[in-house]
Image (cartoon, rainbow, N blue to C red; front, side, top):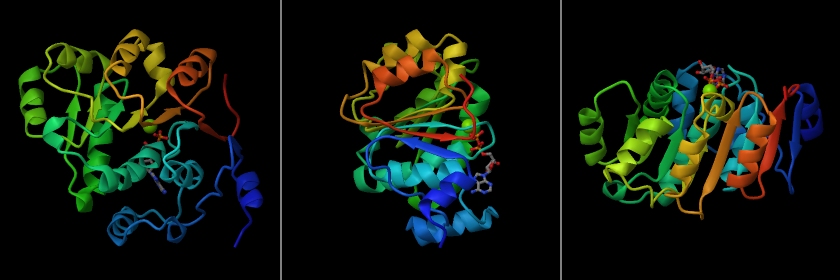
Length: 237
Ligand code: ADP
Ligand code: MG
């Protein structure tokens, strides 16, 4: 098998952090359940993408992670598959609130994430609810009331629903900020910081971004604890 250094060099992977585990260079190396491997196979995926290969072993150690990789590099499954495994170990009563929270900048992206969660999480029987603006709250609230293990939300709508006290984030132990750079560009920082006050400090936090400007570095410094940083290719600042 290819060495860790050679794989990282070939895929332009750079890592920082304490004792970063070697990448999973194949799906066989992941130890994922046969059900998840079947979904991945059925989707036609033959190898993990570099960001998946390097961020999965880190995420499975329950560590915080900042992953910087350009659009189209497979970041969604980078956090979703470890989230399914986290849910298997840590699932709470979903009536009390979600265990996993994914923040996303737009309705379009949030619904794509939900679709991937449903597709790849079929075998884990997870409930995933999507909360976004520009649509009536009623159906979203009713879905929440049925119980959700995973909530995928845009920051504005989630805050509205928090203010109505129709959801509790006190059970969240796995938090994802997807497209963090875009969320900040769109002015969601105050909303994100408000949401963070409702999420327990004891949690795993994963941040995914395509670029690494100082605003993103700042919020990563505030929200993540001793993260492993994984970069793929050149990083735009
Ligand atoms: P990003 O979030 O980095 O922009 P996505 O997670 O949206 O990227 O993935 C981009 C596309 O690649 C999606 O169509 C996804 O299904 C596909 N994909 C994800 N993982 C793999 C893989 N291991 N092999 C091939 N395609 C993949
Ligand atoms: Mg993405």
